[in-house]
Image 1 (cartoon, one colour):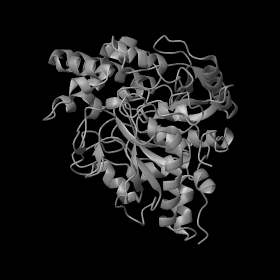
Image 2: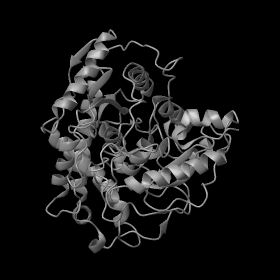
Image 3: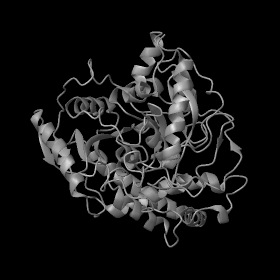
Image 4: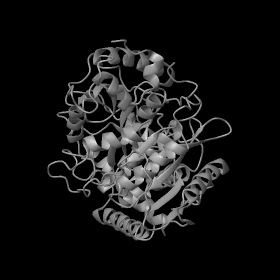
Length: 472
């Protein structure tokens, strides 16, 4: 065995790292040692860990498809006995009572889980800057945010600390950090990946579990390893199709490819973001596809009100807990959200769910005419720290969501509709910041989505673009 150097480790994706281990060129123990050094070095600069690393990796299968690959969990109730606090000063000393269904699959896949990554308080922001932990910094520019809510995961994967990390997404929380940090961020179809057993319907069907990765192939291999419903899940996506006999193989959609760069919230879209998205659309035309300007017919008030139901779904477990969070220890936005949700009537919630139904139906109808939609992931470049401060008073739930969606208007509709969507790092601003482009496919069509993603990875490669504050 020749081992693996820190600089080599930081550039390898999870698939390549597993192949080295499987061939016996490096041991899983050696990889873990290097990973701990890499995580420590990156965290010292980026502040992406929510707590110190575990003394030993969590138990896992050694012969799984990712056997021995270092991994990090997002801050939440995932692994039995592991403390979580959702980035809040009001939650302390709470440990998961058992593994989630997904954690069982992560263990079976062989991931060597080493720690927990930062999130905004209660995962209620597109900025990972909780008062409890302080801001997580972007490896491309330390003065910029990493997105949210899977911000710590994205920062550490982008920096080369680990090749892959757990993330989840109820309004853009995988795709937005991926866009801010130059990563691949796949949000699977509703029901593709289990969300139980403690939650039957997280965010009223809007939340999806997965990860952030640096390569498309890692996203595909992970999806194959963990997909499928858990026992008793309310939703079950159709069987996962093989998306290509060879990664990146060409395929022809049945209907046109749509592209939209107009902000659906009415906010301004940065010209550099528009330019990258239009460049992507032109490339698809060069591949021989019929590309047309089109977008779902959305009532933006419906989108916001439907997203308010997701906030209710996120807040309710804290309000129903035996010991509620102390409001005085919550950030201002969290405190306001808890107060509004606590006062909500059943009819108020039904109106929100009716709005979700209208949004979902319209998006579903759109994908009976278009087989792929191309949009920006974010309307802006990664915002400076403090832009989305959740400890600033004066917000209501609705005004907070509208503020978030002016920064990221393109992601949440597909949580409401349940379609698979992916952010790819297909551009760079003049100042060197990553720009993500979102691809969305019809419900259940991760095969189509990933086939396009793999071709973009081939024709617009990003693997050699490394952040200035990454592991070296």
